[in-house]
Length: 385
Image (cartoon, rainbow, N blue to C red; front, top):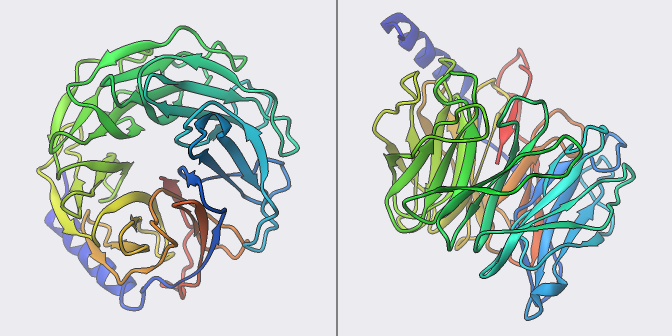
């Protein structure tokens, strides 16, 4: 329970740190040509050279079977080499990186979003920036967002993914070698558009929260620690939560939730009471049709902020955190054409967190040029997309 003195101290700290903390980014956009739809951008060191690389997916239109995972290896200065291209299944939503077989090398899972032709493809990394042939698991109908987390406490990353058209949450348990068991489905009451994972109730097990199109709601699935979940609990937010992220926004040790709602252009913040129950949402206005979110300390003051991608205005807005679960919206900066799903990381080794932003048929790199907000120069934290 927060004391009044603690709340006052947070308010004073936030006011002090944010006096000159306006985020500043310099954006460079790159188009990959017509006939391509770029999926979510993700960052990882694919070739082990110490520089972050960009992973994106490109859907070929009108030939979805030609879809690929593209890897743009970083040079360490915020620029990237020509894309290397790897086959995957049709209509990949994203390329999600993690070490799936315990060899210390980054692998990739791509959810396949085609109606009636979905599931996931798995590409095992070779450690040099390349991948082996994809292994495919077919299930669901319109597979979308995926998280790679240890659901059953065996030390291996499992696959948790949504299926948009069939309205299900799927679990594939990792055998420890990068192969997976039979997909198991958990019924949602609505078709999911987005997902985030964390231990929301403090029991040591991974839980999942999903965002939806057809209701003004999220659904919270409490994990049992064995790869299964309880029936979902609804949380009220705005319409069509296209992106959901989880982090401790008020610094009380509990994981809170933020949801970007594109139909009414709002950002919903739900503060965790401490046992996986949440306060009523607080909503902030965004630019028109906000569709992506990422959480990180973009201003360097030790407090988490939220970056929101705005598809209609082709921009990104930073909601600067105050450390008490509230935010200040700042002026948008260029994010590339139809800016939406993004990832954060230090792309040029200057200690500041930059953004890789998926565009419609391209990619934008936004380098962080924000002035230091605190003389202490606290460690910058990257949380997630």
